Image (cartoon, rainbow, N blue to C red; front, side):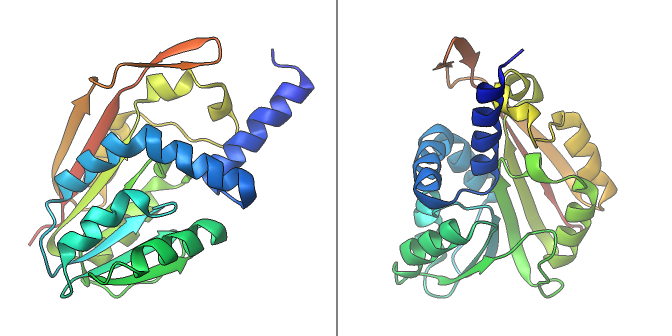
Length: 224
């Protein structure tokens, strides 16, 4: 059982992972970029984006991992970021808004509350944000409304087993099996639900823990 000081440290880390802020938040964001670069790359690949499309990213952090995507969309495209952290939203807007590529809009908001025009989006994606959604089904229903017919939704996550071994995930994280997320996608009206599992990232040392790093990239499309 962790002592009081250790619990406080773990709670603070979990809070920063959910919504990075201040100097510590900038460091956490940099670490997340390093840890999740391959996962983000695979999620973006599953999105199958094309120039001129309108894409929405949930929880881009400082935007570093999305620079290639914004360039791909070209001047005729549009990229909308929904970022809960004010500090990360500012960093994301500064980084991506200066690329002179797609039109960039960064919304400092909760994805559970944002209102986007129905059938206005070609694709929606994000990595590791579903841990902080109590009602995944409600979000998926909202996201499905935003999608155009044929639009894609992609979620990148770590497996429940690997996340459960991290001591901070007991504080504010909602861990779900990939099967539960697939079922929620189908229940939201999405089709062609796919789950690509990867276990080729090796292991990471976290304190006394040696953890296997794995990932699920879950994708689906809106009928039409």
